[in-house]
Image (cartoon, rainbow, N blue to C red; front, side, top):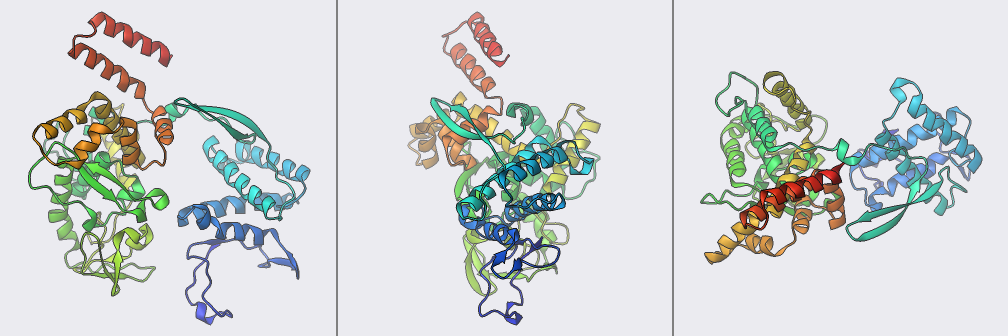
Length: 480
C-alpha cells in the first residue's frame, strides 16, 4: 500500500492532473500489475475505486482513508496466502473469514486484535462488500446478519447485526471520566504545581503551555485533533470584565469530526490562562523562530486576523484549513501558527504523551488511584461536568440573574430555554440527541440525576432525609 501524491504529475504520461487527493491509499499487487489480461481487472482495481470514493461517502479524513486501506490490504493478503480470491464464491469466502477470525483472535501475538479493533475491521469489510456487490464486482459476501433491537429514550430501533462481530464489555465499563478532585490534580500536574496548587520542585518543560491547553480541553470538550490544530488567532478575545457565564468558543469546521462547524464554550478563568500563555511563553518561543516544515512546502502567512489571512499570497479562511495544512503554516514573525508550540517555535501535537506522563507522575507522587489519562478522557469529563450543571440548574440560575439585570446575553437566553440534552448535543457536536443520550449512557449519569433530585428536594423542603435515602437506594438497586 502506498499513499498517492500528485507531485510531479506533469512528467507522467497523462493529459491532466489526477483527481485522486493527496494521501489516498493505493493497493498494488506484488507484481505491480492491475490486470491478469486485457479486460480482466484484479480485485485491487475494485478496492482502489472504493477507497477513492470514500470522500464522497462522508469519510473526508486522510487518516480514515489510510486506516481503511490497511484493513483491505491485510484482508486481501490473508486470503491470497490461503489461495482464496477477494471475490471468490460465498463458501470459500466464509471459510476464509473463519480462518481470519481465528488468526486475529488466537493466532500469533502480534497479529491478535482486541474485540473493538476486530469489530471495526468487520464493519469496514462489510461496507466494502456491500458496495462491491452493488457495483457488480462481487457475487456474494462472507458475512451473515441477524436482527438486534436497540432502545433510546422512547424510541425502538431495529438494526442489522453482523454475526462476525465479537462481544465487548459494557460501554460504561470501558469509558471513564475524571472526578472533580482528579481533574484538579491533572491541571496542577500539567502546570508543574504541587498537590495543593502551590509552587513545586518539579522542573518540567513547557508547563505554562501544558497547563493552559489542559484547562482549555477540560473547559471546551474539544477532541484532541481539534484543540491540537487550533491556530493562535482562533482563540476568543478575553472579555473586559470577569464573568460567571462561559464564553462562546467557535470550533472551525476544518478541524472538526465530519467538518461540521459548531460553537462550544470556555470558562473565563481557563481563557485567561490561555491568553497568558499566548502573551508570555508562546511569544518567546516563536519570536525570530527559523522553523519551516521539513517534508512539505511551507505555507507563509501574512495579514492574519481572527477569520483568516493571506497564505502564500492568497486570502484564506482559517475554517477551511485541515489539520495537515495548519501544521505547515508559518507565522509572519516566525514559528508555527498553531496555539501549541515547542521551544523552537515548531508545532506541538503530542498531547497523548503529555497527559500520560503527567498521570504517571501523579500516581507516583500523590495519588496511587489516579487513572491513565488520554485526551478524550478530558472530553468525557467536560460532558459530565456540564451535564451536572445543566441538570442541577446552575446555568439556569445564572440566566435568571442576567434576565433580572436586563443584560443582553444570547447565551443566557439559550440556556434558560433549551433542554439540557440539546445544549450538550450542541457543545459536543453530535448530529443527534440520540447520539448524546447513547454517549451519556456510557458515563455515570444516574449519579447526576440522583444528586440533583436530592439537592433540589432538600433545598425546597419537599423531601426529608429519610426520603432522600430511600430515593438513593432506588438508584442503587437500578445500578445493580
